[in-house]
Amino acid sequence: MKKDMKKKVVKHLKDDMKMFAHEKAEDKKLVKKLKKADRVKKEEEIIADDMERYAKGKMHSGSKKGPIVKNPKQAIAISLSVAKKKAPKAKKRK
Image 1 (cartoon, helix red, strand yellow):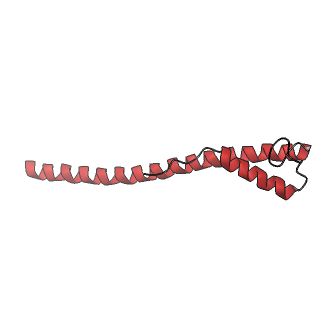
Image 2 (tube, one colour):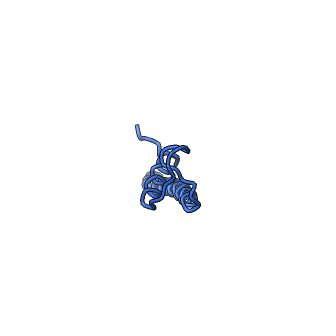
Image 3 (cartoon, helix red, strand yellow):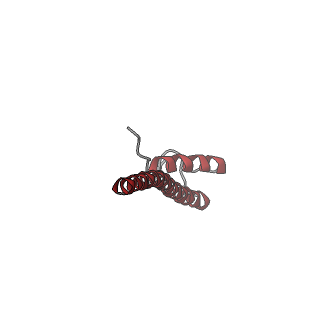
């Protein structure tokens, strides 16, 4: 009787370990998605701020002393570049 019970317990524990491993993998995917969503949200905020500056006529190319940006495509390119630099970076895998 004891051997039967021991086999059942061992089998149950192995099943639990498989289930937990699957849940752990799902949790990692979810955390990764959340971090990416946070980074994208920050980029969108930066781009929106830059486009407001363009609309007000206060966006300069290069530095604050550079010429004022008049082309909307150039404004988009500048804001994407700035957002890429300022947004939080994803950690590199080792």
